[in-house]
Image 1: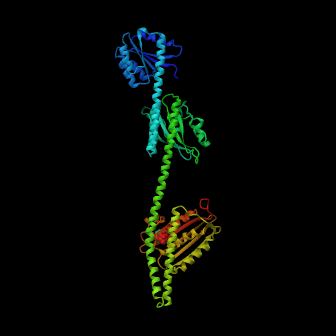
Image 2 (image 1 turned 30 degrees about the horizontal axis):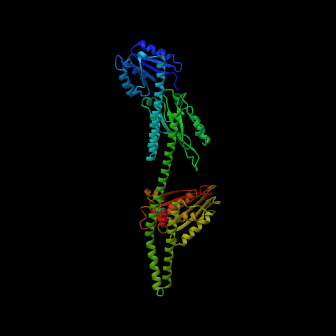
Image 3 (image 1 turned 135 degrees about the horizontal axis):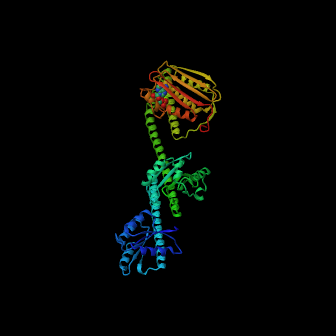
Amino acid sequence: MKNPWTLLIVDDSSADRAIYKRYLSQDPHQSYIVVEASYGQEGLDICKELDVDAILLDLLLPDMSGLQVLGFVQQHYPQIAVVMLTAHGDEQVAVRAMKAGAQDYLVKDQLKKDTLQHTTRNVIHQAQLQHQLRKNQEQQLLISRLAFQIRQSLELEETLNTAVTEVRYLLECDRALIYQFSKDMSGTIIAESTAKDVGSVLHQTVTDTYFQTHGAEEYCQGRKMIVADIYTAGLDPCHVDLLEQFNVKASLVIPILTGGDRHTPFTLWGLLVAHQCSSERHWRADEIQVMDALSIHLSIAIRHAELLAQTQAALDQEKALTAFKSQIIATVSHEYNSPLAVIQLAVETLKEHYHSLNEATREQLMDVIEKKTKHLSTLVNDMLLANQAELSQLKLKPTAIDLKEFLSKLIEEHELMGSDRHTLSLNVRGEIEGFVGDFGLLKQLFGNLLSNAIKYSPEGGHVRILLRGDATHLTCQIKDEGIGIPQEDQKRLFQPFSRASNVRSIAGTGLGLHIVKVSTELHGGTIHLESQEGKGTCFSVSLPKHLNATGA
Ligand code: ATP
Ligand code: MG
């Protein structure tokens, strides 16, 4: 409780003022700082300057009536208690004054010391209780408003901005802000409300790195942060250290904690801060309580926003997946029809004319069926693999692989498949031993690159495969002298179903390079493309010899 109280006597009689002053100075229960005014306007000017607790107000003043002064005080300083001083027989006016908001009235010529002391103490108590009650109601209203807004709004930014504006208004402080920590425990101010009259001073001296500067310390010197033990219970020790650092630097700082449910421990998300930089301020328990309640509501708003972001991300992924699946269906129906038609025709011919066909034609037809069936099977496998990659379901099954032998076999297979119209060569240099990888995925990876090099090269073209090894990595280059890839198409070719603009009638689904990229990345490697339209293409794949923790 404040002691001494500041009492203003507004009365044009200096003799009367002296009596009141003497009586009050003899109050054994309360001391006063007494300020005097003989005019109404003078009294109002004092109210503006000083933190006045009560006014003894004469009904008749030289420049205005006591009722006029009362009206003005009620309007601008509702927390000040007013006792009207009336003359004998003025009771009717006194009643009007009470109705207009005066706390009490005293009849001047019957005034006794005890009565004045008692009445003054009483009205100040009453006014303070009323003021406190009003504040509490406002605080409750603010908390309910914010809670309502949190339920209504999905916009975290909006909620945080409302919170700081309301806090500054309610606590009547210079500045309210919300500070958010990043993962490395540095942070930024993400919402702020500053009083206009101190704003310019603050902004000159206090920047966003406010907490780190000495200027801030000087500004808020002597004001204490209140961090009760309950806030720090269960927090990571580094968060507690951090909170302690703020202790000397800010006014009233309440941690905003998130988590704390069955699955996640409490985490220090940020701080709700109120500054009083223009004058000394002692924070009351109810003010701390209201900030505390707000910080809990803010934690809820933050949780809402996080959940919303997660749902949004899941929805986006779902959408991408649906689009991917539609593309698969479109491609399957397109790419399946023509080989199926060829197979069907070959089978029908064999069935109907088997005996009239010579041996060579029969074999030719069976070759066609085999080739097209293999093609369809590759297509299905590619789709399944791409789908698994999209769902992040691909897992590596690592085994030791001799990559030289692996590539030689792959080349042989391609030569057997009728690629004898191209020259395929393998050149190996350096330390290629000790490689570990997933056999199936590597087959997809190098099989696709090799088949592309053949497919997009003219007959008689040379495809060179160069394998280089050092202590930690293997690099394989697949170089052709084919149609090349236009510069503007090169970036997007690793996306599923992407094909370059110069493929003309060469068949393909645009899935191969996507599978190549996914397989390379799953091995912890990188892929690089160099190509010039009309001249040729070179893909370089670099793979670590040993899979790291994420790849395994
Ligand atoms: P598939 O899924 O049957 O392999 P595709 O060969 O069209 O079909 P990708 O292997 O993903 O699909 O290649 C994507 C595109 O990149 C090709 O359509 C082609 O335009 C271009 N491309 C890839 N490799 C080469 C290359 N060596 N030379 C020229 N263009 C290439
Ligand atoms: Mg391909």
